[in-house]
Amino acid sequence: MKPTAFAATEINLNEILDLDRYPIHAIGDAARTELVTEAREAMLDTGCFRVCDFVRPEAIETMVTEAASLHDQTFWSVQDHNPYFSPDDESFPEHHPRRTFQHRQSGFINSDLLSEQSLLRKIYDADVLVHFVWECLGTPQPIYRWADPLGRNPYGVMEPTHYLPWHFDGNEFTVSILVQKADEGGVFEYVPNIRTPEAENYEHIQHILDGGRDGVHELDLQPGDLQLFAGRFSMHRVTRIIGDTTRYIGLPTYVHDPYRMNRPYHSESIYGRATEMHRERANVLVDGLVD
View 1: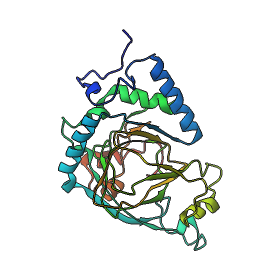
View 2: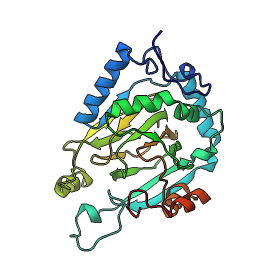
View 3: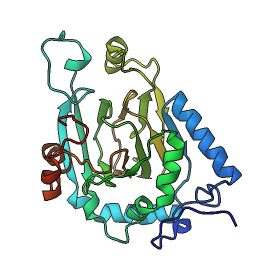
View 4: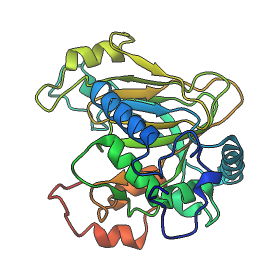
């Protein structure tokens, strides 16, 4: 029998994830090795990798029910922002990415609202998934579950007419599981490696902001799909939601630094509130940066 990497707590992951098709728990299994190799190649090539039907349909139905039952407690973030989430800077020309603002409408069902029986929480608590995601990313640094009690594994929510504009992520990578897709729209679009630490590439970025399509990739996620995405250097968005169906997406968040949390102001802006733990850890500059 091959060794496994399940968490010590009793989580029947096979009832949630399709381990028959994707034996991510079986260290050394040929199918697992092939999947990790494919993921690493895709992450190097486009910074994006999808595992289709990763979560079993029955589990997705349960997660839809959970998200819908908590929908009324969604905190809505409605704001205008540029791709960098930075203030307007008049030192740049008027028609410039740093001065191009688009209207965002989306929300979060915060992580601390999920019950102990939440399947999204169980997925997040499984050590086997942490290890698998880390191997797929191929980074030398280990990854950990995030300490932030509100943002560690929330549901992202977009209602009809909502739009998530073009932007870059502040973190190196994100993990997502689509739970319920919109009737139309809600498509993930991205431009791989449009910038580097040495070159912001403002001209191409403005081309995309103006509606250009050069280099744009589309990923029409389906319920149950797992997505890994490196969004620090790849600009991306979610197209406008059309129809009557709300889009729900699970966002299990892993980090290289398990201690750091969002600053209180950032937490209040994105998740609607901050905890005492946010305020305590705000006094510690873990990496020397102010944010």
